[in-house]
Length: 485
Image 1 (cartoon, rainbow, N blue to C red):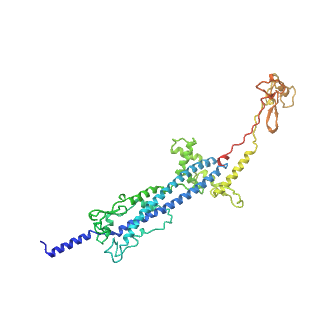
Image 2: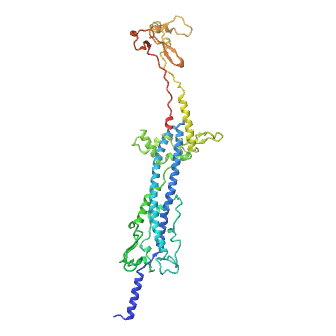
Image 3: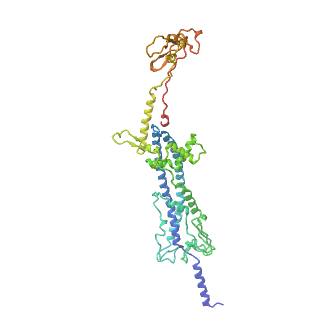
């Protein structure tokens, strides 16, 4: 049997062992790691706001550039067709960019909510634990201080509430939230008992008595049963085993690729216009447009596409730009109300000025379309030339419209056209008409209905008329007004 002294000693050792195995605190450094993640999760909303701001600005600038391309189409330049193709490709690009912006806005709102919610859950837990820690009372606390006998403010500063009013262009927070690096069990479990009621092994810390519970914090990120000590079973789980942290991580991972802004910016000069044409996204739209208009085979390889693009916009120049970009950059426009100032390049024009110039150009084209066209009408048979080409009298006399003259002036032709003979022989005689056009003499005028026959005569309105009379036709020049109006 044990003596009273030995029994008392064993009881003391056992009690001390139980104390060390129960009521362990959370390590401040491990909680600091949770707060660091919380800071990043709350900053996701800043990056969503910043990216949406960038996307929106880029979209507005692309639409303005599209308007300027419409203006270039109306110009009689060597590359007017190039401007038209680039305008079509830019329209397609803008449509895709609008879809991407919408996707970013929708997923951004979801991801910002999920990550901020997870951060809020973390902040609530850590700030609750902080209230159990006081200077000089480190032996009765749910936090094991990293150094000394009090908290290190910087370690847990990430669990403070931010303003949520800022925007950020860097994408560090979303990347960190997507990774979701959290402390492991060993990083959170304190080494000695601090009388933390939350971690009591029997689960009675919150209620006392026999109302023991299996405690779960952060949707099970920390959990323990009422029958196991922290030493017996790890209480800190992984992100994948905890609903709230896992939902936040998944949301950040889904958002991450949408934040990557690899869309081309609207050109602002010769160099950036060349870069715009060379951009893979733009060239993809150009290729698609060429396929749709059957100017390029759908099976064309990259070399064929590059050759076709060079033929449209010009091969790269020694300075790296393209002839199309050079011509556009040197084109100047005079805007109404700024006559005293220098003319502006297409890049300097505001969208409003571009629309104004385009309206003026369209109005001028419409006025040009109203003018009567000067068209050379086809000439009738020239009997004089036919007769003058005959050099023998018998041949000349046989011709129904020619007469041989024995005596002519020096240089004159002996076989000459005879309009009287031509009329009697039924040969049309060309005569000058107003407007510079020509018709034929009416050889059918006095014929009766039975004698009025084709191919030269036609009975119409109780009279025999010459059906060989030419009709003067006018054709208005085609214009690209409808394309840009």
